Image (cartoon, rainbow, N blue to C red; front, top):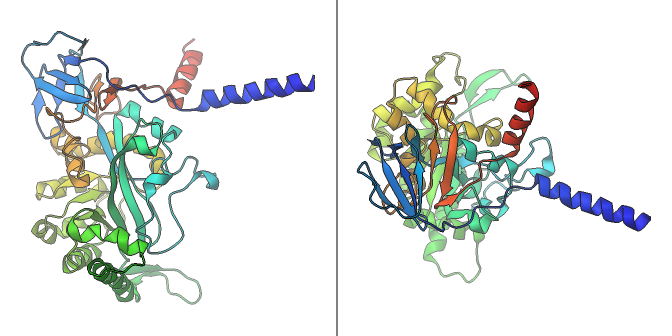
Length: 431
């Protein structure tokens, strides 16, 4: 009897695991697929009405508004619907944490202040239920980024339907993330401190520490040491353009200092992340062609004297000034809120930015910033068939209703734990 009981318990355990596991990743594209009649939003500012999009072996082979000529394979009638390139979430901890309240499920940071050799990719959990919930809103790619310390580590770009991190990888070790020191600190009434904003007396020292590390990395590159220095090894790509330096900075002084410093250190490619006061640094950003990944638009102002709608319109201010802009989502509940990426772009439309330019903030622009625009970010012949069909405007939460989604031509499941709960309770309360 005890043996039978143990067998039943084991079977129930296995059954439970199967119920809670992510769906099996989609199979490789096996037939030609043509989407007919949809409005195609290219991701570079252009639209094709009544489009015909054909893809084969994971690549787009034709896109036009002419009549369909290739009738082989599967034809999807999408008349009245919209086709978009897959949305891209940069500076994300997707797959590095599952439940914020369960410490053992969060693996987004490592011990140490300067650890560029720590690679977020190998900690990425491709079976995360949070990752799975991105796809029904059209978020199909993400830059997986470590947190903490002065230099957090190295990020990588992944697609969001994979067996493991090896299968997920799109661009491995794309960049190093530097948290620039704050030039001001917020004093608190403790240990005799006066409350309020005041200059950070250690700011110069902290900047000098970053400088000394990068000088060491440049010197190491020129040497022929037999002993490996892993932090220096990981940083070499900053000087030959193999890696980008993502500098997380918000205040105007910090952005100016960070850009000036990076150019003095001969860092090839720099991206500002956050950039709350980037609108005050337009000249230096344009001079050095520095793109900005702007913080989530659905946020409160950082300062008491800022306009209430400043975070909503910051991407438009930078775009109008000629800066290459993408949207990111770091902050409170960032993994769960990542599914709202299209609606952050929609928020900027409400501030007067052209809708197709707003779309670029989460497609073509972000692909350029991350260095994956050769294959992703826009609907063009020769690029990856990473795209989706929406019933309506994908930047509006009321009409962002996906019927089909593809990554590299593979048809994805749009079922998640969230959709299962929605069906369960909609059935209950519709009776």
